[in-house]
Length: 465
Image (cartoon, rainbow, N blue to C red; front, side):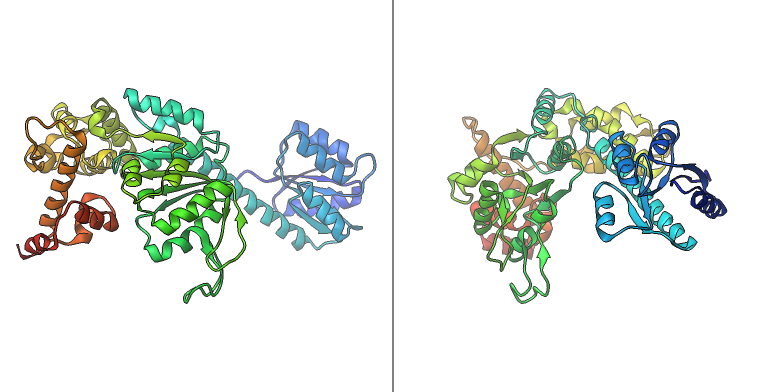
């Protein structure tokens, strides 16, 4: 292990010598400087892991040394020392960027413990920095694989809007990568060092959602045994991603509108508001304009959310991306599965290109992970692909439209209705299982059953079967 290097900046030579002996016994490499100016010269020609600096020195004192070292971009932790220090001096040193403050005289164990704490903090800081860079790399535009014209236009828009706080609405089918796009926006903005908080508005029970989003004070309701921060507070300075925004209940739509208008939140049970700085990115599989027209979503909230709109096309409309995505996911899953798969066999790839991918990119990735696990050699073969994908045509529900019918909206509704009936039939009317198959929330399924007039008697018949 490379020994830690320490610079001691102190005008008392005897003190430097004693401290040098103590630190060398602990395995540190030590250099000394008699004042701040000499300390800066040493820093310009060498790197150190930690600096121990006295405050009272001739020519340049410790506080000036601390300021000058920060100006030159040196991030080495500085521990200030003084025999004449007061609490005010310690506070001033910390404000100027010192890691810690220790009073002279001190015991050898005291300085060693302080250095060990500084080392642990630096280790954690470097780990966090590496993790942050890894996350930024993962959500860079290079990792959103596409050569589709629509997707490339979306990437251009993301690059332009990422630096701004403007609210963004992302629409697209389940599995198209809406959260991936939201994360790319966040990690390519100046908020990238702050939190990114994802929230699925359809997955949290309605009676808990307000408390989860905005927090609550102690005693606000029966189970509120302590004051709790909400997710908006957790995201302060960063980004909150509200997935399935179309599932937000009407009372909470009003509260979200207030956040967008005033930049304020109010915890449940509290009378005063809190100012927050949060960028809001929302996503939905629903047509919010239709939800507004039919009275299920507030028009004023819709306009506030829809400042910038990104519509992610389904995978079946970007077939040219499938070979790229297949190769990308093979490489990704090789890494964590410790496999050596190189490519998909041409026959297997043809099947993948021809499939409609109702679960979109998420379904494709899950299938490729499965195929990589099953593959014995360097290729994904046809028999590694599930039978239902190879024979998907027989699984598609029919759409009973006349030859004179051209309405995409009507065709979409009929297809959706057919899929819901098929899921209910497969699950014998079990709503929870059917919602899971359809990849929508339980609440959304109940709404669609009612909207499409799939009556209880029909569902009871499915159960009997």
